[in-house]
Length: 287
Ligand code: NDP
Image 1 (cartoon, rainbow, N blue to C red):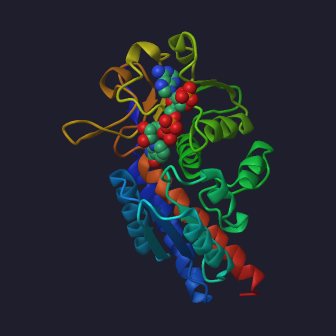
Image 2 (cartoon, rainbow, N blue to C red):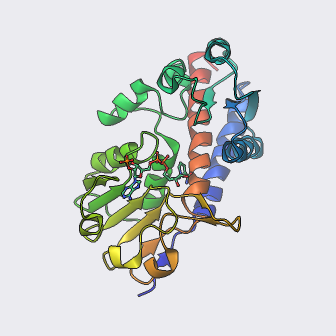
């Protein structure tokens, strides 16, 4: 069997077209959606992510504000900036690019973002709402994965889903979203005994490990849907996922490539959250 490949670029382009239409309609009502992005330090991967997010905003007709700080900036300086952005009615979304340097209390920074502008969905209140299956800004990467599963018509209710990874930004919210959709979810991590025992039972397998080609074909149930969240840079400069695509595609039924899979959907969901926030602000202002 050779798996069908999920085209994340095509889906992202379609959804971004709809988002651009919504942004244009909001701008016509006098409320141009606006995302503020804060980048601290010179982490090259973070700089690329921020550049891509800002460029995607521009293409969708979303205004972006970018604030860059040196690696050794004091947390108070960033907190002051957040307070200003929280109070600014023209700003609808605020994103602090992670990771932050070690002098920062990451949780405190994330909680300083106004919940209504937390378009990354990392504020503890949004995380709590997600865990209670209430309306919330959903973290962009797992939300993008859910959109892909929905677009591909992958049955979720009653499915066995296995998530490898338990980070706050991918693994845990991914597991919560799948649980809320009726899947039976197993979360695996570095302390899991006999990982392959779990992955081989998965109808839906999500890999968010951060290790190149970690999941091999022999760990996959025939016909499974395999979602590769990983983005790893190889010594030759090329990108690869957490799944060994060549062996996995011979076993899986559906599979995402890297690049061109989950990555484009992550930014798309950020744009969508920003437009949702702007729409709420416009309604609240009677526009
Ligand atoms: P983290 O490093 O925060 O988490 C990795 C997880 O993998 C941890 O829970 C860890 O377990 C688990 N893990 C590590 N080694 C093993 C192992 N040998 N067996 C089983 N589990 C293991 O990474 P993130 O969640 O932030 O990101 C994961 C990947 O996704 C990365 O490649 C990242 O670049 C990518 N990413 C991609 C995005 C996109 O847009 N496509 C967005 C965000 C991230 P433990 O908790 O026990 O340490």
